Length: 100
Image 1: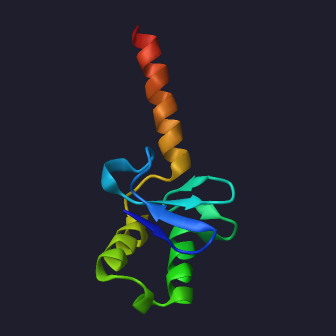
Image 2: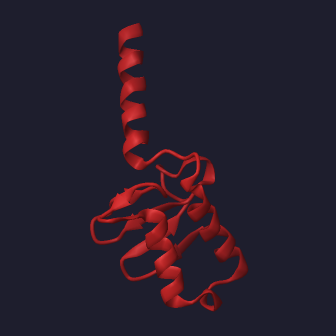
């Protein structure tokens, strides 16, 4: 699913960095990927999504879109940030090389 929250932000699970169907936030200006706990300036990515939904109004979204958005916002508990995911991938790659 893909939801264009604003002209600048898209929430999607159709990206390679979206793990097991968990939505990620994409900055359309820079194409940077953010997980819920990632910081964007002084706020988290989850807060950006919440503010975008509040700005548009919940009535502007279908029920399944609200559920999808909720999965991202609730993802602040127990998910890795994009930086943590990248670091884990690098560590795994280094471990694989050491075993070879």
